[in-house]
Length: 282
Image (cartoon, rainbow, N blue to C red; front, side, top):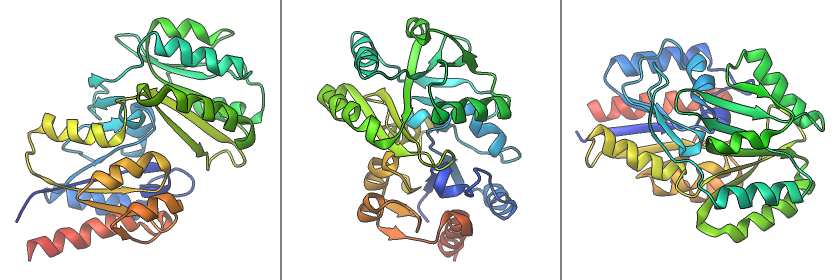
């Protein structure tokens, strides 16, 4: 029986609509992990947000956070490697954002701690994100008058929040940066009606992070089974040996997936892993 590594996105894939891991999914994953299943997650979330969701699960491998900007130990939050945005590209991207009249949330690592620098909210979409950080007690949150002070640190992500039609011109301009950056334009299900434009270093993608994880863990020719639902999962789904889309995934993800399973609300990911794992053992 060949080794297999299961990697799942979180929001819209493993998690329920309210961003929680159901009791059933938690119990299934705990049983599978105890049985030796190799499982981890690849998320746009930070480790500070991932850890409470997966509390009580003994993941044997690091997690991928910020779409591949970090490979981190779940238990300690230690970053094993970092793909941060480099100058002069970082400065040019920030300038493009401000020229469009927008102000980004800037996520950084200062060598010891993770931070998210939040500018004053210009509308309800930005306030929704700030409120979520406050409610969660996110220790990274720094509300500042001038978020550009964060550019002196290791910047792993710039998030611009607005209506889809307002962000579209900026998204089109960022395409001209080519492979220097990775841009994800996506709907935020937790703040209905608002879109996020997430910008990372060009090497900070989930598919590259999965390959780095395999190398770091010495897994050799392990079979990779990846689950996702959004545009930032497409490359990971396409590059996996088996790419699995949940039923609620966007059409672009379903189009590149090898299989389509049930929706995130049906605990479909751990149920699929359980069925696949049992079939391999018999």
